[in-house]
Image (tube, rainbow, N blue to C red; front, side, top):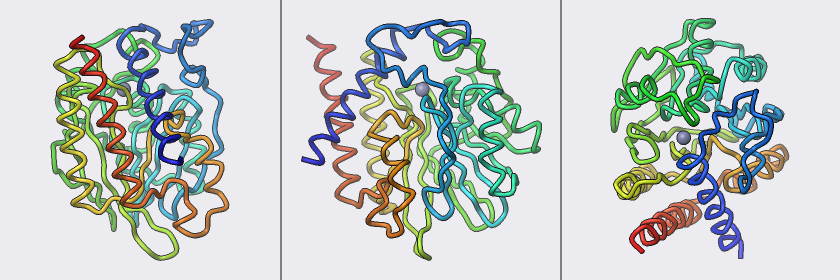
Length: 294
Ligand SMILES: [Zn+2]
């Protein structure tokens, strides 16, 4: 039952995100008064979440709309994504205070405003390096509607991410997986998390939401297979996401507080759970492709 409920949740989320990213030029501007109908209100909800230690070296910071993940290393912080804008960066800064504010790297999963919008401010403030794929750097700089509206400042990029690249800071290495489809140069990440002295491998699928065009859907499907292989090869057992409204993330974040043991951590799925997660994503994209052909 658990996985059936989980699958339903994923399907609903992907459906909503698909509509969001393909049909609605919404931009989440502060000037917008009401969210478009038939979309989860969470997408437009900037309510801050309590910064939460999810693993000994991984912290979740953000809002109900989107979060950034701070990966603590022996030589500073790697931040995965940077939320929407300069208002959000204050949340990120507050959330990183406990970690010493030693921000070194900002890894951007893709060129949508809710992921890159805070990056330039943080780079300038902490002299951090920004990483993004070359393709999405171009895409970001040439897209001004939808989620790439004026709310989210464009950023410079210090290093372009490529498939299979390993980004190392101190004792921690993040593996980059090229997963285009959601955006032209979307990437996903695989990285180690620690609890009670043990290390486990985590994965974050870079783009939540199935794209509109058939060409991009097919690319998304192919990227998912590529990512699944990486997950298998790296023994991934933990799943994180930038959008906690996907996959029951709010509840997970609340429940993680009292999870001393890895088995009780809601972000720990185990290998079987990861397989199910990826299979459900695969089934969803298959359905989206089939529906496009009808
Ligand atoms: Zn996106």
